[in-house]
Amino acid sequence: MKLKYRLQDLRWISAIFIIGTFLTTLIGLPLFLYQFGSQINWWLHGTMFVGMFIASGLSITLGYHRLFSHLSFKAKWPVRLFTLIFGATAMENSALEWCSDHRRHHKHTDDDADPYNIQLGFLHAHIGWVVFRPIGGDVPLTNVNDLKADPLVRWQHKWWGVIGIAVGFGLPALIGYLAEGGIGAAAGLLISGMARQVMVHHMTFFINSLCHTLGSQPYSNSCSAKDSWFMSLFTFGEGYHNFHHEFQHDYRNGVKPWQFDPTKWSIRVLEKLGLASNLRRVPNETIAVAEILEKQRQLDERLSGNSETICKKAQRLFTEAQEELAAAHETWEKSKKEYTHALRQQIDTTKEQLGELKQQMEQSVLELRQAIRDWHNAHQGLVLQLV
Image (cartoon, rainbow, N blue to C red; front, side, top):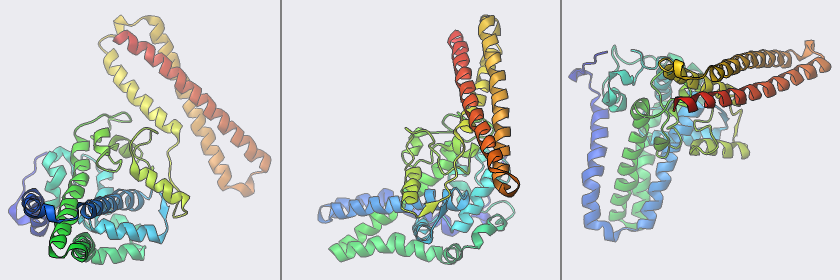
């Protein structure tokens, strides 16, 4: 694909804002600190920077992304209001616009209709798509009609720019002024306003660019999305992007217990507090099967040129494990579907029938887990011979 930027398509306000905040942080902030650094309260401005960074960043990852874009959980109005207000401070458009772009990204990943298509280059995916209009003009917000039903979302869509400037820049400047006068106001504006803004911007931009360029693909290679534990450290857990593209409606991105995903932990805390509910989770067995299929694909590539060096017994055991896994997975899917259907049609299902279907489903889960273990053992035997 070829992309040509035209000057008449440039979003001047976006370009001036992004470049201006970046240059102010890169040049203006060091000069200010050199001149007045000894006169400001670092505890105040350090705490305020961290607080604003977390509130702004989490409002994007937890609010704009997992709550509004993917409907990964439900949240009561205080959570929705908080994330809409502080999401606006990220200055990444309204929740409606952001979610519309993101849903199109998932639906058309790596294709022409993908707003931040990595196939058009790293810089386009990172920032080019932000400062240049989409080809053919802006896309109508027809894929977020569900969000338009929320009056808080509609309110934020109308006033997000005012909210973002007032809370994202005005609030830190006001707190700094009340504490230290004019120098404090300037420090608040530069540190918790400008510098925080630049970090949140590029935290989001790197998910669109770097996490579609570098990293691993443990769940699927069907698109360019990749897992990056390193990026998860700076993006509140969003770096596990390959998992997210494979299971986009799961409220988790870092699904493994050891993976760094503060957004996931925050959602769990909100659930404990009664402020979040209906957390959507992909079954562990589905995730394990996805990992196996990707490992199988990678192994097939390696075996294509080395099949003669592998002993026949190991190949036979692996083939048997594949067949066992396929049969167990099919049985599990069938029993799960039957049990779910019975739950929805309880009037036509007796208590005894429901209990029997539940028992069958639980047994199919045990058999699938055993098949998964057998597959991993057979897979390890083949891999050891390839080393």
